[in-house]
Amino acid sequence: MQINGSKALVTGANRGLGKAFAEALVARGATTVYATARNPERIDIPGVVPLRLDITDSASIEAAAAEVGDLDILINNAGISTDAPLLGPSTDNIRREFDTNFWGTLNVVRAFAPRLAGGAVLNVISALSWYAFAPSSNGYAASKAAEWSLTNGVRLELADQKTQVTALALAIADTDMMAAYDIPKLPPSEVIAQALDGLEAGKLEVIADAPTANVKASLSRDPALFYADIPAALFG
Image 1 (tube, rainbow, N blue to C red):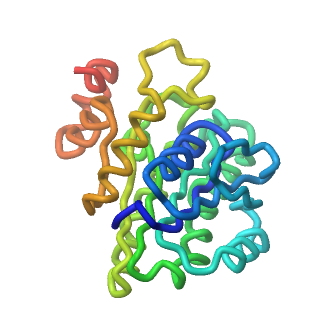
Image 2 (cartoon, rainbow, N blue to C red):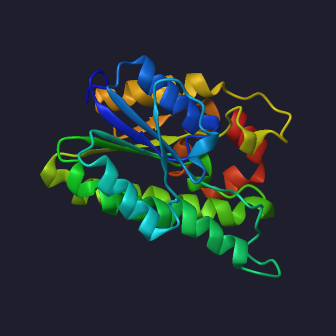
């Protein structure tokens, strides 16, 4: 997959990683970059085409797909975290997380898949796809685990039309979602550079930081060792 000369679409492009993705695609020579959001009037990225897209609304997805037509690169970045525990007083926010992170991502892939033959999909997952950290992140973690699984599944289902499917996994980037945490964070531009380099290299998975690499490596080990000291397991 070559970014230069491509036609790309980014979900959740009004801020954070989505905005950085759109900027980087323009800088790398993509011919057309659709930067999408529920409120496209908030998108202020030079060189992109703002487009309304609510990934939890099937009509909005179908309208965007019809307007865009054929596509080379689809980047599923849009997602939410609501700090929902699994055993809290309500499951409403867990459902919101799944509606966005799992169902929204899947429905966007389903809508654009016929337009992506020979192209590529990149899904932004999380280190939390592979472990649970705190009650307030458990709903999000479950939805991201499901998104990782759907990424692997659609990769198989799109193989016959030669559509590459890549996952970007990361733990801590300097975005609005992580603003409340006073810890070292990767600049979004660094995460995106790794992701797009991996996309062009044909990688199936891009691991953006050391904590995520440590989590992934722990999956073959006794989970009791990991959960006995999560900070040490994450940061070494």
